[in-house]
Image (cartoon, rainbow, N blue to C red; front, side):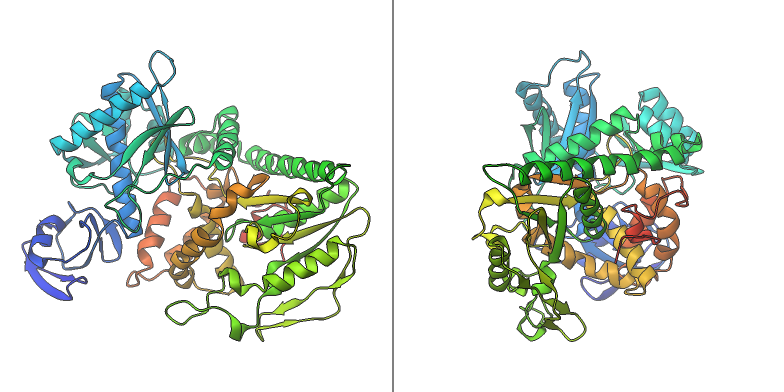
Length: 557
């Protein structure tokens, strides 16, 4: 017999060796607002079919937990993959990226004809049929060579390349009926768990819609994001041109000695985009009818705003203009006036953390040609201080205003739109694991933040991971609702980023103690990083955006 501690009920129960979590659930009688769909076992995410052969600590989870959402979404993707293959034999499905509160899917039909609404209706009907049949998701652990043979026979070249290059002795795959697929995380027990979802036409493809993160009884509301979609499409176009669609492609290129070239191309792609943005700023500045004067720059945490702003400033100077800048952070209200969260801690991401009245008043004076003394916020004392820093928008001068609220219309609602140029910067993950496994865009930023915080001695990886959910909530509330206001979006993800980041992140993540809740996230990040063949950063230039996080930057503060 083994002893299991259930965190949900704060109780212990004994079970025979090999008892599944699903069987334990009936004994513990966990109360939950929503159906239990996964668990953390000794702080590692597991599916409900997981069998325990030793005593464990278990916490059962529903969809409102991040790891629960991942398991549900992976399973839903497999359901869609099988339904598509049965409704449209010979088709190829590509799960591209998250957008509009769902996941965009490209589908290539066997006859190369255009995907129709009727096709999508047929796939949806087949998905509903498979849910009704309650088919089991079955997991198999086999020697990697056997998994490769299975996917070769199925024509899944993306998975073959991944498994051949990842260096694993054993690999796992899943079966749904007679369909095999690979997923780097656990799945649900069966298709009957997938009760809430939708499938709709979107941008020449399909949008797989998923449950709302706070109320999984309903589908998350659709939010059209055409500009964001265009940025994803631009990234995908370059991946296709370079024949680097998946991690297997990247690994093979690196093994063939192309790592140095890929670093150079990554830098060139980003610099090309920065030059284009600077030239557009110059064009708008010289527009005789509506001359632009203010550049507003925002983006979520660890998107690389500091390096981007400095590289953009260099290119603006190359266009014959002189950039001057300040940050919305300098207009923070004094610490004692900062809004607070329900737990009593300071809400530093709240819009009212910034004295927007004072900021906008100074901005209007600058636009009017006046000289303005701008403040600097002292993060040690928690006070806004004036130390004689004066700015003036003279002829040929452009003002760069950077901050998380820069695109919020309320911040500059008294400034004419015609004289503003708005930039949104974020990570659009450069590459997918395979055709059915994408990397969440936030994982780029979380890894960057973990590495930077650790190297600077600011926070341990446990602290950074524990803070991340609150960071993400603040972004969803204060940053992402305004990203479509941008005139241009900049993808700060690095084509070869995860291969470079692996060397830096692995030892840091490995230091997270297994007895902490944060180990669950560290374990997940380590698992998907391991699919990337490591690439040294010695050839990455000091002006690179990624240097802001791995160290050695000549531009970052």
